[in-house]
Length: 210
Image (cartoon, rainbow, N blue to C red; front, side, top):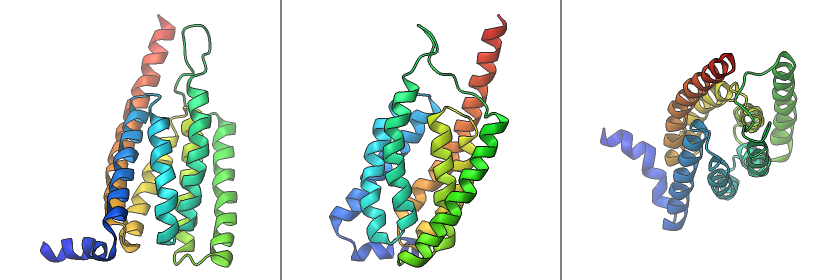
């Protein structure tokens, strides 16, 4: 057991206390952001803004340039989502959670493929990324997931779940074990989020039938 702990956390021996504290701080706000997303709470966005702004710094020095760029994208999309979630369909109802339309499903796939191809090309040819294929894949999936979440489309959780599972070993490999554990919890929360949002959609349908 001690050997496993040493393998997972030995890299932190070379980190400054500031960097360790910063990663832990960002992790806390990342977990809070996902929890607020599950609860359909507008605080998902300010907590997400804090988390992503810190991770832009962390991931730059870790050499995960694709994930760094997606956190910069999250930072921007958090403001967009914050705006969208506060819009009302009428005087008393906010934009509801919903399933994606056929057109949105198609757009999601196109966005995933195009962003993967572009990111892989950039990471492979213009950065020192040691894992360009995986970095581009997870980044593209998170890119689509954030876009769908900002629109309150339940499909976002599916993208988060798959990408989170891929990201866990990636961060362990890159020496960010605290962040890897964060993504393990993210995976569990994403499953909970999908279940919670699905129940919310069913409740919305029942309300409309009354």
